[in-house]
Image (cartoon, rainbow, N blue to C red; front, side, top):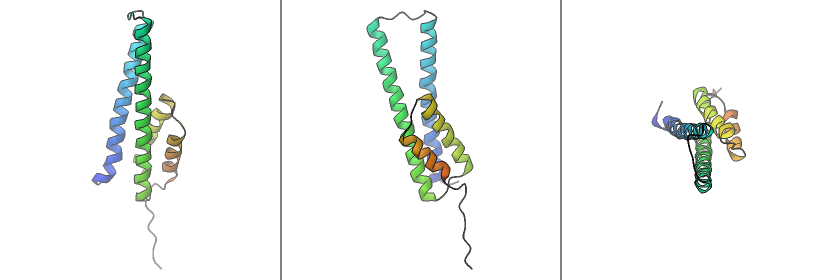
Length: 125
């Protein structure tokens, strides 16, 4: 594997880690609120909700951009190996199901999955 084939994997890993952290943070906060351990004013709650939604949208945009960059890279390459497709599928699940992204990201994902799994060599006769 050369450096160019590692870039999408590195980006996907970093973005996945960020999204995982944010989702975990949100879940812990919601759990504490449900248990009554966090007492906040209405203004504080609204400010935190706005901040959380902004982070969620930023993560969604980063994942969408990652899918676009992966598509551009693998289209130039002419194929997308199965192991890279698995990583991209994980990214897409977070984007689509976790963050409710759709539209362009879905189009990028479907285009990547439609690429061949390996480069076909044509023989000259």
